Length: 409
Image 1 (spheres, rainbow, N blue to C red):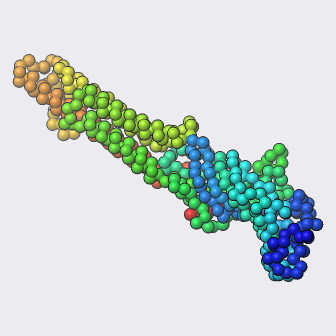
Image 2: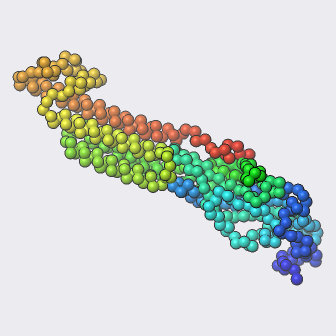
Image 3: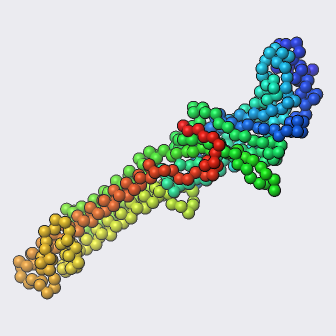
């Protein structure tokens, strides 16, 4: 009784049992073709499908749905198409013939979408065999967060045949350009897919691996809308509320405004920290929020100090008069500043009014100077932050730099 009655019925030829009998009687699926021909089995691996499911920055894990096309030569499976009704290829279960042992060794979890025994292989008359593997893997990926959210990540599928050195099975990687089947997710865009063949030593014996490296660029719009823009507006409004030149806020109001803004920025920073790996490097967006916190802290400190100067009855420190007298548009000469020195302090009512007027002018200029300086500092922080958007991406890993083939999307 033949092993594949359905296959033989579909072929509908008289002598279709040739290959079946050949597999049943003369074929030992436990033996590699190397032991039959004495030649290295060249296994070609291509990646026609690669979809990014998600990237977990805190766990440094990338999840992929992908498909491998594996091709090799097995002379024991050669046949004549005339014996199969001129069929140029036939399909048999992968469990009935020898197949190369391949693993994605940087994976912590791999699932085959088809159960073992449900995968078919294509056999051609010249003995070449093609096998399709569709898998889902969660792989380790070094996440480089220094430039987040303008970062570019390089995550790989590292394929190897760990039990058979290149003398027996030699792996070769290739790419098939099919842009619709290569894509990232809602957060990352796949820019480039590269393949590299790397050699290494294991237990004193040379080994070979194939690395399919995907270059993934993060989409920063979400972080700009949810974190960057609100942080800038909160900081700008804080500086405005505390140091507006015409404002007449007291010390308590300054503290309330400052604490409210810093609480909002701290909550924003905690949201960012929840999604980042616990590493020694601080992401760019974290530095940006800390800079906004620094500006808010400076505005609160300056506002409390100026409010204290406004309410005290003693003359202002002399260096403030000199500093204000040198501000652009001051109109005050050194003589006016010198007017309030202890030696020339007036005792009449008119001189007291003049002194109070000068104090108000000096304080107004200090409020204006502090307001303008901190707002310009916020603008400079924002410009510096966005300058990383159009800078060159960080240096890729060696597997990407020395790749033998690349596809750009």
